[in-house]
Length: 529
Image (cartoon, rainbow, N blue to C red):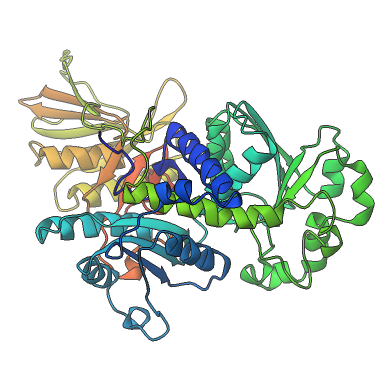
């Protein structure tokens, strides 16, 4: 029977489907019960039990909690556990990530657990080493687990958080009301919840943070796209006045040191807004639990230590759950368990069927002595690109026309550009080039990517011979002159790994980087200006 988990990577939480995660939690509950009851027979049914099965920890960023929980989880499996000592490795001295991990893949290492400040690193490495394994006829494809990448995601923390919430809810997936408190701007553990909480049928999220620490807008939009009800509050005190208070609270540590002098001047005020106080206890609902990914700030904890011995303490069991969840994750990827899974698996969308360059029937009317759009005379032979950035300001349209001309390679051809003011009151741009007789398929793809919703007219003998309308491509890739603008992303040129950028269209017409998740407009992804 096919095991859908075997050899899979977990780079973002959505790499596992909702059904797969629900299965994951069921198995975690089974293993936790067996360990607490010291049931060796059940524990052995989860163990990899192969001393030649390589599990490799590579922590390019400091961590204690995540690193040690993975180390102990790996030891549970009686497998080969190795660690790359980054302080003495040349990987921190300019060595290529690709070369390093390809080399380690050839040494019978099946699973890599990677923590890094470089966002999207594991996603790219999973692609790169897969090709390496195929080229060199390795009997396996290495799998990668993202143990935290910059401000992007921390999917294994999300799994243990969700499992901890489910224990509180008696494994009921029907509904969750969750308060997220603290540094929601930098916190990758809360960013993972934008998609992670989709395991619940109904989700209400209360975001509690001052403006400077509020969740980035793109993650809020993802939550709303996923059907979550999202409420925003500037402080705990303000939240407690709202009346409808969650019984599950999730705190994060403020990382003010990463936000510059202006924010540090407001440090006391910002900490005050997100720190729980003794006088708030009586205003909580009965049965409330607090969670925190740990460690807390020793001088300014958002959950003060006087709460450690109270019923509010859910963060200690949450931390212990990290080891159980990571045991199950390793067991799944190794293929030890998972054959009894039934349900929808996470499958990448098939983009080949969506057409975004549509040829339409040209309408040739009598063009005799007719001017096009305020004085642009019709051309006898060439191309006319119309409806560029319709509705934008003239200044923005002119700027983007220059970019289109550069990207499509029209700068050296005769012709010109025009800004037209339509009867609907909206401006649009026009490019006309009498010397250009056609565009190749690749050039058409580039046109759709940089000027979606435009119209391309191929003019021959004064008539429109061909007419195309462009729509936003579902994905954009394999263009050397575009890049993600997030400098922390593995695909940004500053990281010098030569990673080709790749973008996927969002529901609201943006483009999300396939590696770091940053959303761009179609105008922003190009390097030419």
